[in-house]
Each structure stands twice: as C-alpha cells, then as structure tokens.
Length: 602
Image (cartoon, rainbow, N blue to C red; front, side):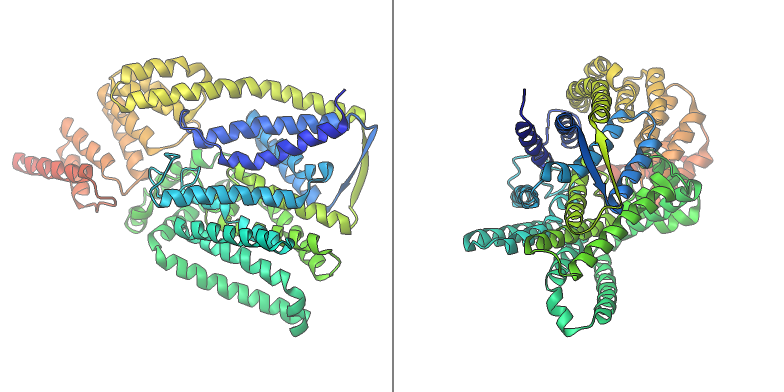
C-alpha cells in the first residue's frame, strides 16, 4: 500500500507545479497558448483531487473548520456551477478551484514555498518578455506585440507578473542571508522593468498599489506612533482616493483612445446588465453576446459619430467586476464582493492587533497586497477570466485564510466520515472519465485544426476542408471552428454548406467576420437581401471599418440599386482610416471610381 506520507508528497509536488503551468505553450495546436495551459491544468487538478481524496480514505473522520470567507467562497463556486449549462470542463475547473483553496489547510502547504514558486514564474516570464522586447523571441509568440512572455498579449503577460512584486518584497524581508536578499532585489528590478516596458498603464498602477500597500502595512506600527487609529483611517482613505484619481487621470491622458475604448465597452456592458440584472447572461457568455449589443448600439447614428473610432471586436468587459455582473448577475457580484470585504476586514484587523509572528505577518501582508494589485489590474483588464491566472488569486485567498485560522475560531466545524469521502471520490472519478477522453480528442483535433488553418492561409482551401472534415465530429460545437470551416467552404463557392456552418457558429461564437462570410455566401448564391442584412450587421458591429460598406456598395451596384450604391460608396470615401494600410487606400480608390461611373450614368 502507498503510504500516507508519500501521497502527501505527491499532492504537494503537483500542487506546486500548477503555478508553473503558466509557462507552458504550444505552437503546434490551434490557440496553443491558451488551450495547452488549460489542458495541463485539467489533468494536474484531477491528480490533486484524486490523491487528496485517497488520503482522506485512510482516516475514519476528518474535522473541517470554516471561516466566513470559506463559506462565501463555497457559496460563490456553488452558485457558478449551478448557472453553467452542460459545460463539464468548466464545472470541473470550478471544483478544482474549491479543492485548490482548501488544500492549503489540508496538505499544510508552506506559504514561503508558494511565494518562491510565484517568484520563479514571474522571473522566468519577465526574462522571456525582456528578451522579446530587445528582439530575441525564441517563443515566436511576439508577432503582433513586442513583449508577451509565454502569452499572446502584453495584458496577459503583466497579469502573470505584476502581482508578484509584493510577494517578492515579503521574501526579501523574510530572508536574513545577504546574498539571497541581493538576488531577490535583482528579481524585483527585473519584474519592474518588464512591467514598465510592457506599456500597460493599468499594470503600472497595480504595481504601485501593491508595493505601496505592502510598505504601508509593514510599517503600520511606526505610523501608529505618529497618528491615532482614527487619523490613520482618514488619512489612508483620502490619500488613496486622491492618488488613484491622479494616477487614473494621468494614465488616461497618456493613451486616451484606449481609455475611451474601455468606456465604450463598459457602457455597452451596462446595457447587457439592464436586460439580465439578477442572474446575468450565464458564465462564459459575454463573448457570445457582446457584439450583438454593440451592433444594436451603433444603429443610432449619434453613437457612430462619437464612438465609432474606438469600437473593437470585444470578447471581455476589460473590467472583472463588470464582467462578473454581466455573466452572473447581482447575486454573483455580491458574493464576490462579500469575499473581498471579509478578507480585507479580517486581514487588517489581525495586522493591527499585533498578534502575528513575523513570518505570518509578512506572508499575510504580501498576500493582501498581491490581491490588491490583482484587483487594480482587474478593474482595467482581465485576470480572473483565465483559469491558470485565477490560481494565483485563489492561492493568496487561501494563504490568508490559513493564517486567519491560526488566530481565530471557525464559525462552522464538523466531521466527515470515510464513506462521505469515498462518495466524493466516485463522483470526481466519474466526472473525470466523462471529460478526459473529450479533452484528449480535442487536443489532437486542435493539431489538425492548426494544419487546416495554415493550408487555408496559403490558398489551399480544398486541402484545408479535408482536414476540417477529419475533426468535425470532435469540434462540431466549437463556434470558432465552425466559422473557419464555413468561411473556407464559402471561399470555394460551396455556399450552402458554408452558410449552414456559419449560421451554427453564431450560437456560441461572435465575430463580425462571420457576417462578412455569410454575406459572401448569400451573395454568391443569389440571396441578395440576406447578403445585405449580414453586411449591415458587420458594419454596425465595427462601424469604423470600411470593408462592410465597400461590399455593400459593390452589391448594390450589382443589383442596380444605384442610389444606395452611391450612399455606401460615399461612406467609404468619407470615413477616416483608423489603421492605414494598402487595402484601405485601395478600397477608397475603387469607390471613387465607382462613384464617378455612377454619376456619369445619371
């Protein structure tokens, strides 16, 4: 029989390795940066859950003790699971978050080891990012952006490293060895430089807040000697508000177009909330619904005039609080805010009480400062949207919870027997056996998908379609796959098949390109009114783009509706070019030619 000690060691090792999943990526499968991380997270999660439940079977009874933040965390994840419709992978990942959170108590994870693991991840990511910034990109991921680490955008890159700064500071003060302290100082400089060069303004603010709060809480006793408790509260609130307002305004004026784009997203997101205020539109459905709301918004000409140039193809609210509200409603948002409120309240109360030993004090200060950094990032971007990044947030919550339990009583305590744990083991195993084969098939299918995409890009659509057909049964519910498959059929004039796939893709994927492809398909098959409708939707979704109006002008000319052809041609000619390109200039030139021809004919 495997010993309990060995099972603990295995669980501990895999638990630590989950943070390192952020460094994994693949160029051989479609969307390999995101999906490979999820793939490894899924299997590592199951192994941890299985090992921990197996450990529990070796004991007759296990005592559980919950704080209020534990109960709120369970409540939030339970609520999210109940709102999911037949997405087994998402359900399993949420269960993993639950086990991951309570593993800190169960396995007695050493917080310093977690901090060092986070330091390693942040340093490696920062080093990769800095190499990319200076032209050495061995990852081949920095295609559209200069610095991305093992991700695809600078936003995700800084999301992985910025929160580590207060953690590294905690390690600096925890170590007495001068050589180690000097190495840690160097890593702080490395991470700060990577954050600065990323150009992400929210990350600069997040780094400032994380570091600032760390030193404020670390030196709280010194500050208390100078100010009363009441004065400290007033000073902290006023100084924080003024500083955040100043920095936010400063960051806004550095890149106002980007800031205005977020304001547009938030405005349209509020329209989504108005339609689904209580339970939201469903977890993961923001990307499916947003562009429809944006198209509706731009049907108003006044909105086009003021907002068209900052509109984009959006799949995230660029504000986690707003995203939670949109997808889970007021119930989900209140549960999330309640977790934050009690975490901050209990943490600050414990720090002020001076009951913590030095190690616990620095660990809990580092954790709450890291959470604050994450929340600042989450207000301007996305963090919790990606499961492999969410792991960091949950780890900090769990570390704080485990320290709080040393110094305060739980509000609920109970025992669970071996039979209950055995039941959990059967349920988790059954769920794993349901999902694991699908995950493996999807992993292999995405390799073929990548091959098909390359064939389509290199003008070999017939070969691409053969590849797409090979994996259709596996990916037939993936909207992005159906879009690419359908668009490829339309490109070779197999319009009916392409239209069927494209119409189905809209059920769980939303992109203006779907409507352009549908318009092409309907136009080629002679269904001109449907083609016009789809081109118009694409135009409303992305009102700054010339292409939908260019296609409409050509189609109206084709069906001899000269009045509307002139109107659309003038839109193309008069619309400012957002991103200059030969294609954009060529469209404008062709519309000038068309307009001259139509005017001569009349």
